[in-house]
Image (tube, rainbow, N blue to C red):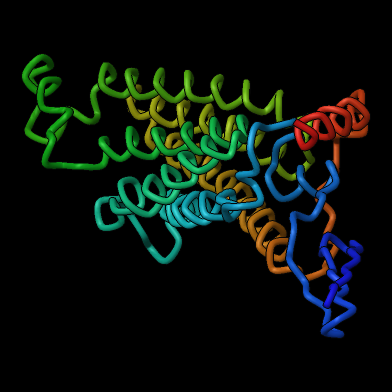
Length: 283
């Protein structure tokens, strides 16, 4: 007996009509994602990729955000001295495990999926937390050489102008690196751009705090430290907001929360992308 089948497609799902058996068979295929939604979920412009990794693997961007915001929240609150908090040694794990581990995992999968800018972002913040965390390990005694050179009491090396100038310069460089990333986030959305703008300013403010410690102006240094912590708290809140939006989108929860899309200020390339994807699928 002959069997006739016809197919139709609805919302990305191929429906097979089997006339002999009178059944409908569904086989899920990839759902076409608009450039706007892609940018909102992956924080990078939609460009043609070889392969279908964004359909086969989970979106790793939210994972990196979780590591970033947990570390940033903790760091900012300690800097502001909430609840009498002082010193980062008890939470040094945020610099080596919570932040970097999740960020590095996200970076690798962003690379696999061909998402250039998120890969760069995850890698940048991962090495920042790792490198800054080294300063919080008393067992390394990084200030010890300055004690001998300046003939200061044990433990006083961290207060010398030379030691603090080194860290201040380090934070200035990080501020310019992050500001460079801010320029490119202006093509994505306002929330992401604000994160990079504020974290750049926070690095420069904290750099000023280290300069003041080296000069012995501890009261001003404390104010700058709290100011840098407040900026980072806003960064963490924006990060949580962005993470929530990405997770809601991936869980198919329709919230339509605003992110301040900035892509419409740039020339659109939807037609070129559609043609490239059409050629890719045809080949």
